[in-house]
Length: 172
Image (cartoon, rainbow, N blue to C red; front, top):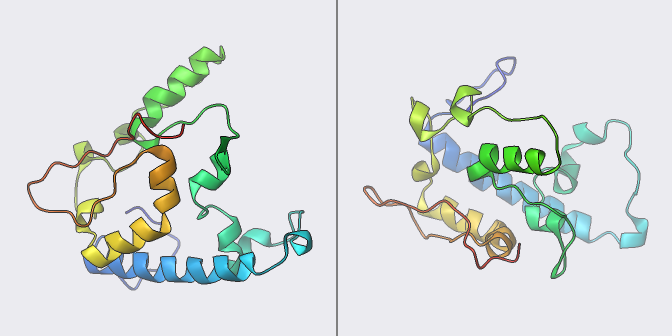
């Protein structure tokens, strides 16, 4: 896990125990914030970006922790034209740019500082998630798993190869 070097961490972000604590803590807080946000009548929700909006931890539910299915679908209707999958980010992004005649490309993940199995070191991976964390992620991200065709697992076992790619039968 990469982290901002300006922030002092009292726990090792590459420790599986810390990873599992973080998943459980973050999802619990997100669920509480989503419950609070969803309790506000739609007509009373702010429609404008407010000053210091991104600094308000209570508004995480409205930011980048929202399930991706909420960005891509309105009910059963797909509302975005193109979806690029993270596991194929470089290839799909580059093909999309070519399709639209744009001379823009992404370098391979391992050359841009993103952890991959090819540039492994002392880093946590999905295999370090314990069964409770996997269950929490499955529950929280169920809509994303369903919408984008990813298979949920109950636990990660040593020596088992896991398919991390979306299925063809997904809604997109």
